[in-house]
Image (cartoon, rainbow, N blue to C red; front, side, top):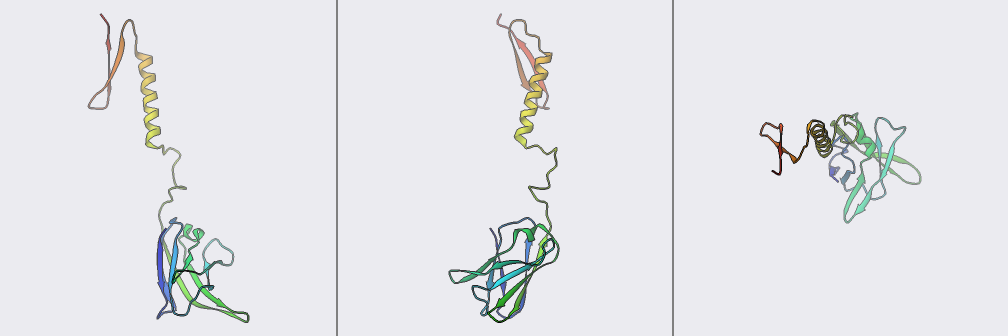
Length: 160
């Protein structure tokens, strides 16, 4: 989990940068005017309306979640800190979130990408099948030796 910080002490707007697909991020809010109970209304491509997240207090600091769905896109993302009471509401601050694109480890793998251990198993099976197909055992065993160039040399040893 990463924590991004916005400081509204002297400004109405602040900017942060996140990486695409870096889910589970929080934004820490520094402000004399914002309190627990305000909300951040995130606006990003792919959502109808806004994605509202509460601002909560942890110790003496204020935090809110950055929506994971917002981090799937690289379009402009805005977080509007919205204050409301029983009579009215208004935007008090704005967060400009820039998302740096990168490949997702979950969604952008090729079908022919095989984990190393699986490829090793396939290589061993293929070697075993090749040995069985080419080896003729009369009396003795076949010893398989890997050569420096990666090839496999087979030799037959007999008991007598």
